[in-house]
Image 1: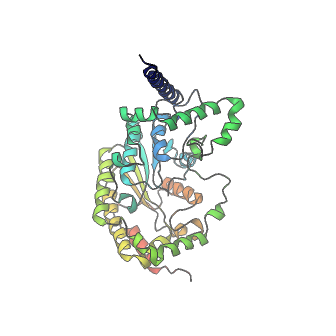
Image 2 (image 1 turned 60 degrees about the vertical axis):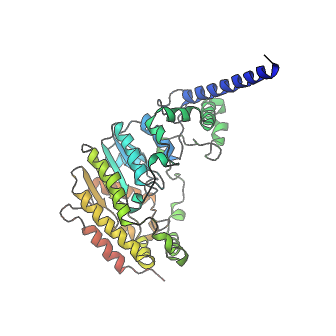
Image 3 (image 1 turned 135 degrees about the horizontal axis):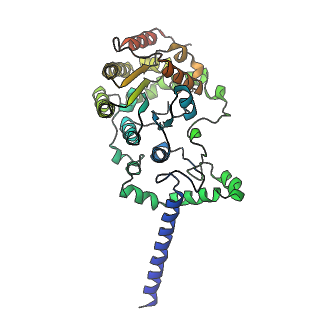
Length: 368
């Protein structure tokens, strides 16, 4: 055998050894806790919910799951547990659509979830690719099939994260490594499940959520250069199709699971912006709401809440950082309403809250 051939064999052997060692490191540390809850090494978590949720579903103990978009992502599990007397798992994903949400909820219910709290709106049911074509959602990690496990174990990024988690678990190195795992260099910077995507406790809420920001968001929405954007994705037939597939289909498949579904308290400015800048989009929103509420209100395993006409919140612009995203104080208010049954939709008059919202939107006038 020539020297060149031997060198190639050595190179291949060394490469294989490195790959095997990296896969073994990832399997041992298991940064996502996909195979087992963290024991040998301190658990660390990622703010990338679409990836992290796959591990949370496998590693955490829960009886209730909390799903939604960025309107629900800042809730704390400890607050949910305290308000509702449950053991919750927050699975909310920023910018998520109903295909993603339904898929993740299905995985959680396979693990025994008996209650689902689901923040819902028309926007999530827009046209979206199948989960296997969704580049943002690692569907095979949830399935834990061969492609998913192989991608996880053979990922160089996961091996790097595993190394840093292992080093961080060595007491003398913990302070130094903790400073480096800041979410910029590394993907697992969070030490507590309760802190995943929650606002820092020292956040200046008044600076983050105030009337000026809400009005700035309104002006941005009604700006002529952005008005075309308001109608994107608002095709009534597509919204109804997504709703039937991802909501009604999931609810019918799990009749023994209790679903608490709520429409989030967008600020009144959101609907007023549609009124002034894109009335056809507002009509689609109203028409979809009427269809969805009437369907959901009839289901025996659904408790439906509509917070969009809760004017004590929606008309107080100091609660918002734009026209939709509300402060942690409103998070707590929503949990208290769910516990009390306040603003629950009456199956005998399912469209009453929608009519209240329409009246409020029609009457509202924005300050000069």
